[in-house]
Image (cartoon, rainbow, N blue to C red; front, side, top):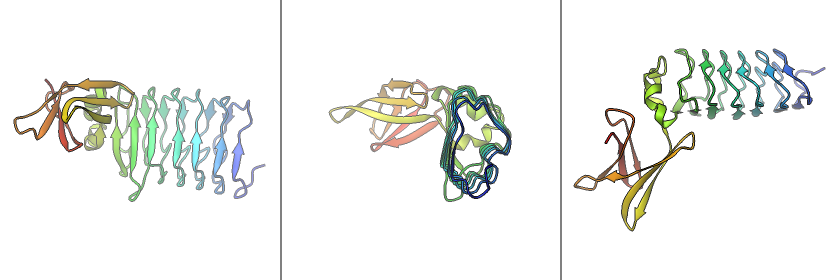
Length: 239
């Protein structure tokens, strides 16, 4: 039997298929857990209030993070989620105050209330969204301490106009990285890589005073994204 307060690490036995609800609830000394690929489901609040759990990797095959699975895991700094995931239930990561970065896999379609209340006032969080279609969310799915939401470039407009996502439009950005290509001292191309690893090269257009570069084709009717890189202001707009 597992005794509260004494368990510091645990490896789920290979061949196990389920972690029951509340299985590790309140094991405050638990710092690490290994979940084998055989596990197909994890119950509600299975790791809730494991206050010193620092990292978790969910295996492929899991389709849902159930209600309050990692609720109040205040020391959690790393959570790896599988591409098989389609849903995050209510309070899945609620109160994970040290979780600064979380990537939502490409097949997720639904994220329930308070599932992504991560980060803290002094520890701002970033959520990376891989789904190209914005998942269904509630008005309180995402916490106030999420500072940035990174989305696929071609899905930017879909996210900033989607129900409940629109409220986070000022936090949503689309690029993973932007770099400039030079010939001598002259900028000849802008390279953009989005979060899905798609790389595009854009010609630039310089105004008369050479103070600003506009990178070619974008997915909107008006310029919607501007950034400074290597001393140049880049404005992404239609051509």
